[in-house]
Length: 282
View 1: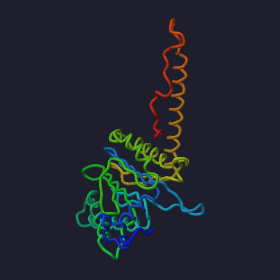
View 2: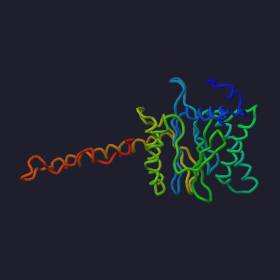
View 3: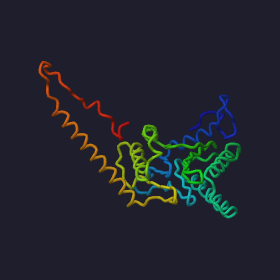
View 4: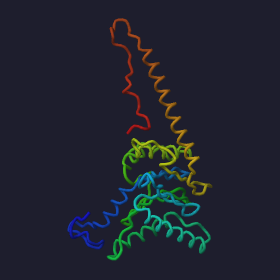
């Protein structure tokens, strides 16, 4: 996509004060399949949507372990993400060799952001077309960061990137106040709900999503398909039980609607539209 004479290289400013090549790299993140992160006081959970380029191919890996206390999820060009993951692993190894202690999460995020920013100031380079959700644990507790191709970074309680991530963001914004007190199982449940929102009509399964967890006294680990499928089945069964309870409660309320003497057909009624929305409604 060619916009104008101001997007031929990354170092050319437009009259509006924009770097179009950097914006194109950020657009590549929006076109990638969704990645979601959320954290509590003790755990950080990453989740991704795994989509293959065709029915005959397998999906590309989007969850990477950097160190025992750090992992990433990516959206955008996974080839660029693999290059950055190798750089992050190298930095963690070097820090541990020199200082004999794990590399703090915030320091690693700054180093990756500086590396990405250099690519916005060199005419012979291009920005990395990948966004990273960095989950980690250090002395300050759990952290969740987002690294942007522009070189910017920010820490979040919960965040989603990639295509159709707005539905997941809406769910996270509605629920994030409860995340801090969540257990690992509850946090994974919220992550799967957010993934399901971004999938929209597609059915959630262990084949089209991935989940990774890191927490206090628990190293970063990507859940295997069997464990993940068990979480998904528990999610579906819990939803069915909740719907059954709501239907039973509705029947009980309808049976209790007895008209009072002198009021005619006007009675005490509780309409179904007054029920609070379920977790799956947006």
